[in-house]
Length: 576
Ligand SMILES: CSCCC(=O)C(=O)COP(=O)(O)O
Ligand SMILES: [Mg+2]
Image (tube, rainbow, N blue to C red):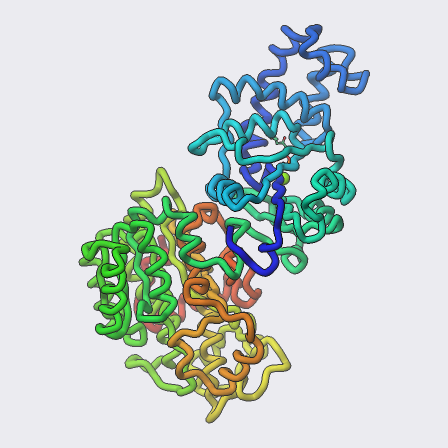
């Protein structure tokens, strides 16, 4: 398990089932119908049997009086998803045959089995607390679609509403914890659930508790993100998790893939990303960067460290500030591989000096947005080829990752002055905080490098929104990812005031490059994100909403049109 300041105190993990470890659709579309189908035959053959009597007699008397009243009541409760104990107990009984004869297998989210194993290996007991009955819980974990299928050896204890009480009451969590006095409740227990009321009850009982937002779950109520960490990726990932750890968890989803990483120079996030991925046997790692000698240094390190055979590492010179260079690099990539599974748009600049690209675009916007836009659209045929190959087995595992920053929250896209020539910005394009100093909002000589940088990081999120809109239905997923604060060569030319501010505001928050690239690896390889509507992976490897100005579909469209106009590329993609 990844250690972190908060989660490193965890001594016990407790998990909900439906919407947390397996899709809600498995319960609603497989388990419930199975029980309803099995019910008439069971009532006919077992109504008066001693085996069935406890299930029958647990129902209120008016429904236990006849098989037809009983069946009507079961159907009504199931249709309303009423989580009453006597129904849950009956369902567990009816599912047993299906599990035992192989008709039912529980489809766990792909991170669940590796995570259970890693908690077990770390000596952390894992317990289950579900509205489903304890026998039903045991059946589910004994018959999963994983290998091994039986995960019950990894689970220490099971709780339901009968042996622990209602899941929305704090007293139930206190009662569970009281059974394990060796593990203090305050901070020592972690409870994960898709249900906000359950999470709040566990938190009231002193547990650390988070909402898990999985594909297929209902949208969370407004404001939930502010109150809880919302997670869709592996719950144990946090801001201290390294890319190497993420790659280990998702190694089966890296193996055999063809990956392009831009900005792969020594000591950079691009290099850290390449090192993390290389250990999991990608079929091809293409490194792109401005400087030949730096590219060669990273490529040699991958081979010399024995991480990859030289045939699996290729390099391409790429200066994202120059559209001619981007076009040449895209052609070179197409010459290396007919398909690309993952594109990581990592390269970027952060400079205090205003200059223009060869095409006359402000260099930070050109390098951090226009170049990646052009590269991505030129590589779409390769990405589409990969998605077509993966369509049947792994839709959504073809990925585009755009590196962003939480700085995007401060600066909307300035369409009225994207070249940052000092024109008056429209009111909704002004920086989002009134407390920002002049060096941030105006900069020296009318140009603020930090404003330019953060605006380009808003553009990275808007580009992600535009790509997702166009490509998701084709099996290509797009995410923006925020690495956090890392000392890399990116910082060498930043405004001095920004340097001082980062040193003060982020003291103690520095991540290593390996930690910084962890969100990129989640965005690129976490299979549980394949169907996700979300666009932003936060520095703690979990999904969060980006700022409204960066998630706005109309603004994403406007940026797409502007980017097409600046490059002459991408028109085809908007119709696909
Ligand atoms: C124990 S498997 C069946 C799941 C079920 O019936 C159910 O109600 C699950 O609710 P949860 O508390 O796990 O969300
Ligand atoms: Mg649930």
